Image (cartoon, rainbow, N blue to C red; front, side, top):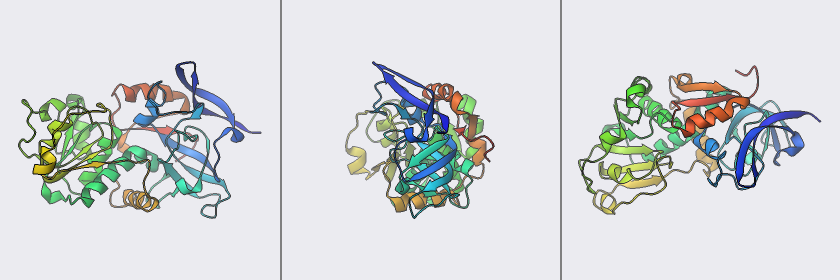
Length: 335
């Protein structure tokens, strides 16, 4: 039986380790479609999964990687046939089901999205869950009424995957964007090139003296950061504005009042990229392959790594050192 190396996380006593491990197809999670994986990418969640106590992985061992793109090798589903180009993001991939940091993945057909014509397998993974989350956030904000004419959109965590992609998509759609990054001095040129009109630091947007309602600065906010600064953000959102919240890199809790919500009518929109209705997931990927596709998509690759180099990439993203996207080239010779 053919064997291959995949990045597997294991738990021994109270310690968690991620390393390449020799596997066979029979070792993989069940599914009706077998995919030859060409590309994956590194997300914050992937890196967290290598740490004990985060709750990302509940059952060990597990092949990591919450995203993949590749080609169908075999299928017992009528929806897909060998040779089909596909992508998978979200669901339980790389969490309770073996994921994309492997040359092969077996997944349920209902998780699979046919690769849109406007995207290559590589481009799909430059986008990945981070880009999908950014697009999902914009989709939710537009459903709540956001238009470019209403004013600037604030993007927190701007140099990360979600933030970078959000800036690029918003710029593509004609929005004015204020990017927020702790790395303003070193990253301003990068963020401006993506489409940010202004670049600020977290200190710049934090109120000197907190009050629940302050000057109205932004029509909407895309926030993959969360944490204790959220009330400062709420206080400065315009009437009937909205905050699309998708992450907790800055912390899981905050203290706020009801005033921005009942006196200014702002909306707090929770963004969950894991459980998305199939029709909405397909719609967003189609948008990402056409008019929402950033013009400089491949320039957003911070670096490209192999499966063996993933542990270093995990440390980089956990330490806040990543700028843009980290692409994982799984199949040698992929384009």
